[in-house]
Amino acid sequence: MKPFAISWRTGLWAAAGIQLLTSTTALATEITVWCWDMNFNGATMKEAAARYATAHPDVTLNIVDMAKADVEQKLQAQLASGTTEGLPDIVLIEDYGAQKYLQSFPDAFEPLNDKVDYSQFAPYKVALATLDDKTYSLPFDSGVTGFFYRSDLLEQAGYKEADLQDITWDKYIEIAKAVKEKTGHVMQGLDTSDSGAINILMQSAGSWYFNEDGTLNIKDNAAFKAALTQYQKIMMTPEIWKPISGWNEFTAAFTSGEAASVVTGVWITGTIKAAPDMAGKWGVAPIPKLDGVEGATHASNLGGSSWYVLSSSAEKDAATDFLATIWGKDVDFYQKILIDQGAFATYLPAREGPAFKASDDFFGGQPVWANFSTWLQAIPSVNYGVYVNEVNAAIAAQLPALAKGGSVDEAIAAIDAQVSQQIQ
Image 1: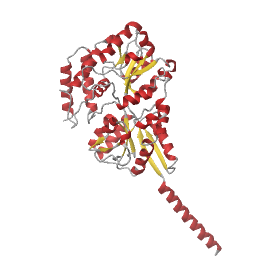
Image 2: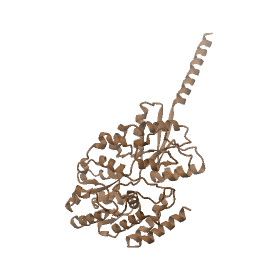
Image 3: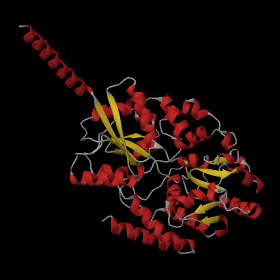
Image 4: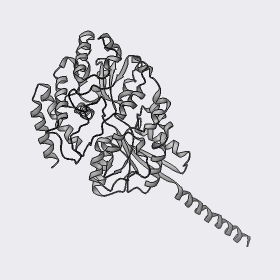
């Protein structure tokens, strides 16, 4: 009988072990995330996962890093095919493409209104992920813009921090001419095939290329005409800028010391600070505003992205809770990713944390993050629409002619015609 008893007990424990293993397996949850930069958004997600794991040790994150274009291509292809197998639980989407995904695939993403307090996030970020009164994203980083300038060079030209507040783009050109004359440095690099500057000008004026109903808003858009006219003034003042092409030349223009400033999103801060020998020689001011345009401001946005939960996800409840718990509430988390990754997120209570209030010796002791927080709240909300990439390509096609003095009205007509044809 003994052998039977041993065998019986062994069998009982074996069965219990199998049951325990099955229970453990059933409790374990893996959330897969697609992102595109393990040094930036991937690193912030890794930090978020570590914090969530302290109270949820059964939940792990599988962070998949791909090129941004690959993320967009794979997501688009799978959603279009209707095949959900292989899709992640959470995906990072650039803000300019948000409405295109939401409107093209209306059941693909999970609305988060019941889990996330959106009153705690920058309104413009919430608006761009909202469709039919439902909001689908957990807002992440901002592209709030700033006028980054070499304070030492501008002071040689006779301009101090106080002189760069509340200026117009015409004043910017005047300052740029003085910098060139007195220091020999150009004011900026300029790529005549890149329409990003027009996006900045447009949103600073509270306008965009589409109306609220999604129809095209180009031909009779006074702000668009003002933006192109202003940018043409800059392009037709060649002594103040250096021709560049592509990202590497864009960053090299100011990191090499050749250009005295750059107007772009806050995400460039890390690149500027990568040259420690430049500490104390940089400052940041609000961007100039469009003169003569009603509602024009010194606040705008360029780029930015947000996290979305896929409705097809078997782990969407866990994914939603993870985002709502860490990204939707944890103020300390936002201090950590601001310091470590330079991630300037759009969770408004984070502004009260120490990292956001600290001054930065690299920028002459300015309260850089506090200033960006103030400008963030002033960014006009606009409807990015579905076809931002198509509009940007059409604008870029006209910039070389405008740089040579071409007609702004003819450029607008050509842009309107090209985009109208593409979105039919």
